[in-house]
Image (cartoon, rainbow, N blue to C red; front, side, top):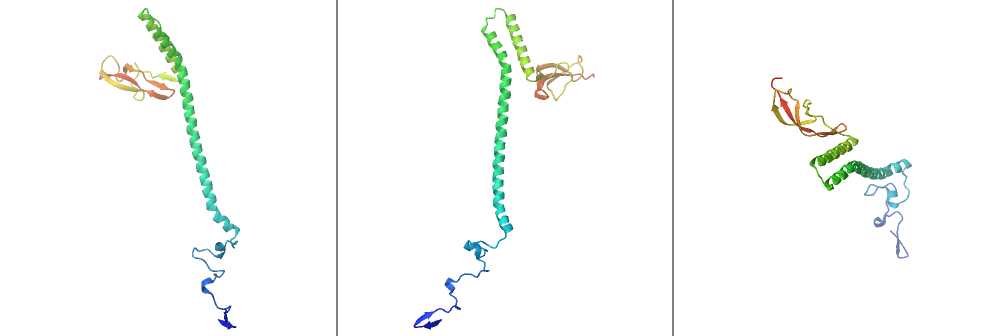
Length: 195
C-alpha cells in the first residue's frame, strides 16, 4: 500500500479478499455460473433453455392428463349407473300390471276357490309375458337330458322307466336372460343302470 499525505491509498493491484467478486468464468458452490446468480441473461442457447423448461411442461401435461382420465372414469361410472337405473325402471314397469292384478285378486271376495285359482293363473301368465318381453326364458328341464350347464341335480333316482341321466322332475324352474343363465333348474335325475 502506498502512502500519500499521511493517508494510505490502495494499490489497484492489491486484492481486497473480503470484498472480492468472482471472476467471470468461476462457478459457485451450486454449480452455477455468475449469470445464474446475478440474474443477468446467460449465454445459454435457446435449445438449452427449452430443454431445461421441458420437465415442467411434461409434468403439467401429465397432471392435466391424469385429471382428464379421472373425470372420464367418473363420467363412465355415472353413465353406467344411469343405464342400470333406466333398465331397472323398464323391468319394474313391465311387472306393475301383474302386481295390480294381484292386488285386485286379493281385494275381491272369492266366492269359490276355483275362481281364485283361475285369477292366480291369469296373473302367472301376465308375469311370464312380462318376463318374456324383457328377454327372460325358462330353462327346459323335465324330460330333457341332464345338462350340468343349466341344471342342478338335487337327487339321483334309481329307475328303469326312464333313460339314464334324463331329468325326471323339475323342483324349481331355471331361467335365462337371452344367452345368460340367471339360475339353473333344480331337478331330479334318473339313474338307470341298464342303459
